[in-house]
Image 1 (cartoon, rainbow, N blue to C red):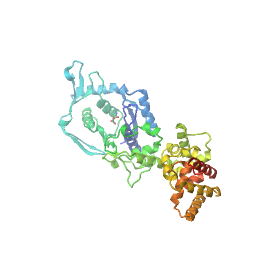
Image 2: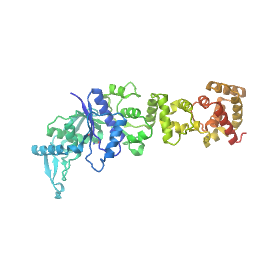
Image 3: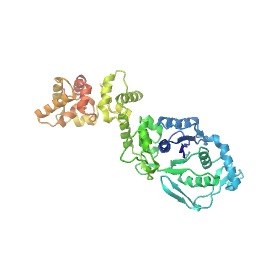
Image 4: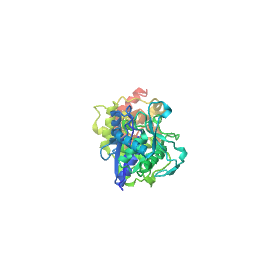
Length: 439
Ligand code: GLU
């Protein structure tokens, strides 16, 4: 059997990460099995399914590299087929007409549940069962003649020859109805796999109140598509052996529904940032530099007089600290700004405390005579000062860090000094001494 899966979003203008994760699993499963991954746009809600909303879905799929086979099926175009099936069910006695509430507005078509318990084997959740009395008859076609979700969803899956329906577990209740429909229509049902919910730290469904919840927001924040893909794939699935950072090809190779967990998965922003950093490192220096520059341009932090070689060196020096392209401009702006601001707390703690400015004077004197001005040389110079004066290295590194960067946090001090170069370092220490009254 050739596997055929689909992603069937209802366009709303935003693509929630829970929905796109379903798309990722359908895609991974199809690609792993050498099957087809289809796209169906469930656009019957005319008010919400605007062309822009549809485009948002297509953009999210394209950005994440979730290529689909063939043309998308737009559910709106299938209305005739939906209504035909409703008529067939009426003819078979599996549905009946009813004037709901007796309002005289016309009759709707109601699906008649078979009056038997319903059970199925969920590929993720295992055995699922429902008592006959717990699933009521339900409307298939409204009195205005429009098909409801259940009818369109099932009929389109049949039309598209879908073999596996992988979707969020908010649809489990629907599946009992859908199985009864398959039986009444006389078509074997697909395999169903219901994915666990994505939850926040409190175990509640992850929503936009918890932070970025839509694909577009992650894109705007500078996440790499391969990192978001990787992170979302791991929200509910794991390849085993503690493997985490993976390419799409590696995930395709090891994906299986058997290894999808049924317990809810927590979205952890810290982990997501870490994952992004890992994928960023795989991109290589040049590309990281270009991405950081683009982010700085977008945020109005880029300056035309930044020397390209200096910029590259700063990017390399920040290394591990850059998880998002935007981090460089956020955390390392001082590298490029001679009028960098001083963080008040760092100044109070590191510069204005007893003896710190005297130390800075001494360091200035030592650095003035230092050639070459490498990381190893500045470190050795400060060690000598430490030995000669009986002070710890801690007392020496903090004042100079704040003096050249305005803050107590940053990359390794000696690498930073080497990247900045002697002239810039001396100029900055002098400026700091002038401002803070040491000389
Ligand atoms: N349009 C439905 C949704 O987005 C489709 C569910 C399904 O995959 O069957 O929830």
